[in-house]
Amino acid sequence: MSSFSKSLIPYQTPIKRVDPGEVGGKGWNLSRLFHFGFPVPLWLVVSSSVFDEVIRERRRSIHDALTGIDFTDQQSVLQASTQISDLIVHSELRSEFLEDLLASLEAMFGQEALFSIRSSVVGEDSEENSFAGQMDSFLNVPLARMAEAIKMVWASAFSSRVLLYRHRKNLGLMNVSAAVIVQEMVQSFASGVLFTRDPEDRGKQCLISAGYGLG
Image (cartoon, rainbow, N blue to C red; front, side, top):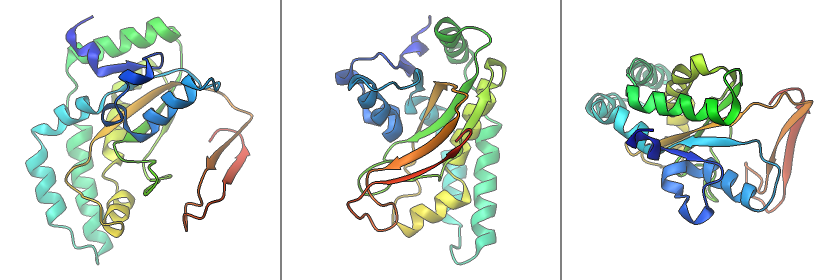
């Protein structure tokens, strides 16, 4: 494998070597659950450094789009979100990185495996800000669509709902950094989310939202 393999953080990485700044909030919590012995579907994380590298040359355009938003005008937010999304979705992943990613996934899961592609933004799923349901996930993704799905997850970090959430919470718009979780797909009978604090008022009670079928 090339040096780009350091941008892939597999599930069995020792917890002491897992940096929340590289794997994001969700990736960090998955690692904790795994090392506590919970039956977590296996995964690897595309480090936030890959996202940072891809958008580095586009930061100026992203900055201009964000500073031009009128948050009292929903159309203005949507226009900026669409502009940034187009920049990210049409970016190119380095061939060395993509080769490493696909080779690692094929070695771990096989060529015919399907995956759940999930966001793990740095700072999400924290005590102060849950970001629950804000970013997009993509289910049953084959290896052939991996690059496309990863870029779409990145783009969703600038969706109109995320921009409005960040603005409402007084979070920075310019310092977004996103890892991506590529996780073994489970064809579930039932799915749900357990909130360890109430996501509306941060009350100290657990809340479960669940239903039949895929999440």
